[in-house]
Image (cartoon, rainbow, N blue to C red):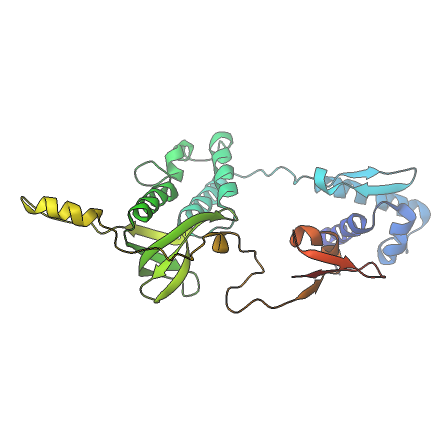
Length: 295
């Protein structure tokens, strides 16, 4: 037997996909829920279900005399109330994810934590300080690494990084000649020659645990020579390198072989948003109304 919540969500999914729909269509779609009850009992049950849908945050509205519609864009999650211990657990997990993982929604997570700082009374006093979201010296850790990265790139200096590999779940030391850097899908990336792999590789700044550049050390008369050595470029950037090849890569692009033609057709709920999933890709519609993308 499905739980009451699962039953309501199935009802929501049906109205979202097929709406506007009448009460009669809903009763026909869910005979096990409404078919066994008499007309009065069925109407009372449907009234309770409508209230349950609204409590979940969905905007269920009348779209006619007896038709119902759910406006997905106006729907909101219900308010969350956490106790002090729960709020502290959410705060601790959020800060840890922001600092130590390659979180896909880093900007949104940081905004959420800042809202927690100002609006949640259950948090400890230290959670009200923005420094909790920053590095050891008060600046955001990613900004510090980006400044070092761009400085080394301008001077053509090799960098040493402690880089977290999600595949092996371990931190590795790499020596990299930076060819370029950019922002891709909300993430800072940099591309360069990795000496450990003897190949050009892409790196995510959020996965860099430590970034250093070699510094010339000298005393007395040797300082001038050391300074000239420090100013000298250590590598060159290939003439055919284009950072846009890496920064504009889409989620379906894999740089492992020569491009091959492909045809993609979506079905179900994905078909309605297929143009959003493959922006700028050429498509055609057949006699049955099915859209095919070719890339």
